[in-house]
Amino acid sequence: MKVPKYYQVKSELLAMIADLAPGSAVPTERELASRFGTSRTTVRQAIAELVIEGRLVRTQGSGTFVAQPKLMRVRPLTSFSQDLTSEGWRPGSVLLGIAEVPAEGEACEHLRVAPGAAIHRVERLRTAFDEPIAHEVALLPRVLPGLQRRLAEHGSLYRTLHEDYGQQVVTAEDTVETAMADPVTADLLGVETGLPLLLVHRTGWDAEGEPVEWTTSKFRGDRFRFVSRQRLDWSAPDAGGGFHLDAVGPEDAAGPVR
Amino acid sequence: MKVPKYYQVKSELLAMIADLAPGSAVPTERELASRFGTSRTTVRQAIAELVIEGRLVRTQGSGTFVAQPKLMRVRPLTSFSQDLTSEGWRPGSVLLGIAEVPAEGEACEHLRVAPGAAIHRVERLRTAFDEPIAHEVALLPRVLPGLQRRLAEHGSLYRTLHEDYGQQVVTAEDTVETAMADPVTADLLGVETGLPLLLVHRTGWDAEGEPVEWTTSKFRGDRFRFVSRQRLDWSAPDAGGGFHLDAVGPEDAAGPVR
DNA sequence: CGAAGTTATTGGTCTATGCCAATCTGTAGT
DNA sequence: ACTACAGATTGGCATAGACCAATAACTTCG
Figure 1 (cartoon, helix red, strand yellow):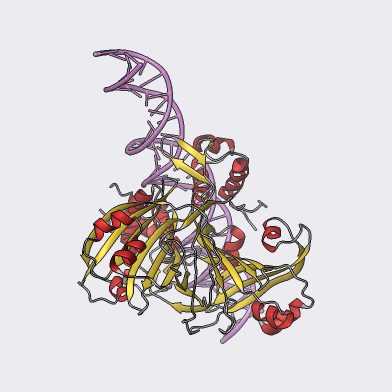
Figure 2 (tube, protein in one colour):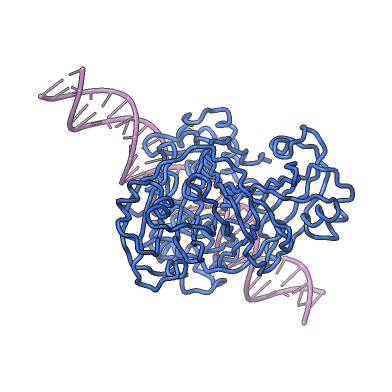
């Protein structure tokens, strides 16, 4: 796949700032342009995307600096009752790949497995109205013989886990944040690079509190809106009105240049 | 406030496509450039933002067209138990304005009041670590005498509604989508125009199912991540695994040009 | 009539350049 | 010391033009 020059600049810039502390200054646009042998416009395009991703901050007259890491909002959802009827329409799903891979990085923490342990990786493209909607990678820590065949029969991953392997996701935690479409994801979703995405991570646990899945989904931000209805619990202090903050580290962003 | 030329072009473009059906072609970049008396670069910047907002779609070699309206994802949350301890830190809140205004537009539907009916409007800037985090406008349909004074005493809007007026939000529906920072919001949040935001709408109902609030929040997408933990109900068909889709109309986007 | 190749059109990327606006810094004046 | 002013520096906006890549319309050939 062809990689535009501004995207190469972005990647090199990303590598350059990886080791810098938040608040550190990066070279000026004019300096970077001559260093990378390109024009200032191209450098600006690269920087603009890193700003949108929350990796850099710019101040006119002052300079460009490494951004602080993202914050996190925890909404203390409490009690809830089912009152949503399942109206609506069920979209399609295209299986892009399924394999056994070694666990690595963040996945080890979320799935509570040792690095290098064998886990299942299910990559799918979710569609609606025959249009790509989201790119989804599910990681499953358990031993699941014949997963591919059984998944093909059921269609639904959750149903397969439940009916064929007796695994049930009872508790789940979702995180929603914005991200930008990298060239690979953009290609899969049929959109152009740089489009804002809704990046959703889901961790699912069974009744014993053991992790069952860790799924990363990238939804087209220009086509989607998440809706959740819930009951609030007033025994919690300031339920619903307040929110809690914590600092978390940034995920790695732009992929490797080819 | 000064408005860049590309933003004027964007607004005129937005007005131009308001009456067009989805799929309609808009003039070419070169045509628009000469019509608006500007360069192609400027037109491209305007179009790029409209694409990010989901109002236009571009196809190389073919042209630029009016986009389909956004889709909606409904996640059928079901049962839930409180197991989140309220750790963390409570952020600040700056009251920007509070007034009685006539209800109009969407608000009438969500609050179930007649157009023109008097409602309260509470505009706040939410902060964390002394940094602007979100711009929030809460609309309240009930009669609330002395709201401003009592809100100043309590700080929390929810606590004020509960303790002073006996109103309790028991059920709430949140929607989360991406949006871009318009110049006014960007100014308030201290970021630059065009940054992706997490646009959150919350409707709150009391025990009788009567609307209590309709709140619009714009969070900095580069600084936030929403987290919700929930219990899944397996009595619902395909709970958790499937998702439901529906077409909704687009909100109005760019503000007026000045 | 249908398939294959050609050409014009459209958006995608990049360059080079100019001026403006915000910021910072150093210097002169009080 | 302190303030006020005047550059120098930096990012913000815009222009004009060039070439590339994908698409669609047209032409030509079988």
